[in-house]
Amino acid sequence: MSDLKRTSNESPLKDVIDRWLKAYRLDGKMKELDVIDAWPEMMGTAVSHRTKEISIRNSTLYLKMDSSVMRDELAHGKEVIIQRVNEKAGYQMINDVWFG
Image (tube, rainbow, N blue to C red; front, top):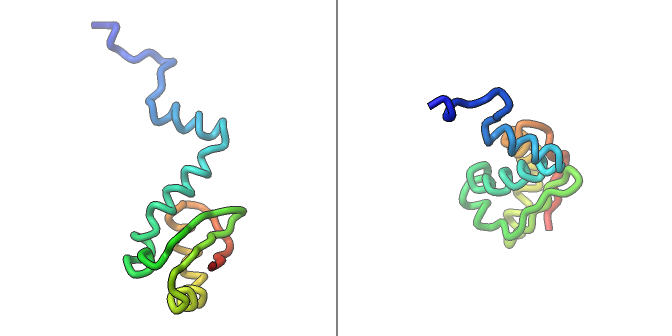
């Protein structure tokens, strides 16, 4: 039964994966994917249905919209988008939003 006890050099799998992601500098990319997946939750179904492409590069959120009216409305609310994305990420992930 002593074989089942955890030794001091063993770590929970989550800790091992977190260290691995940091070592290979993939932790930021994983956060970006989490934010992209949460886009409908953050912005609502109307906006998410009109969003055709979303990506994050160099601290900028790039959105491709299929509605010029929606694109114009969102352009006026850039600060709200930036705030929601950064809150979801837990740090300042983006500084700007570009629409295409």
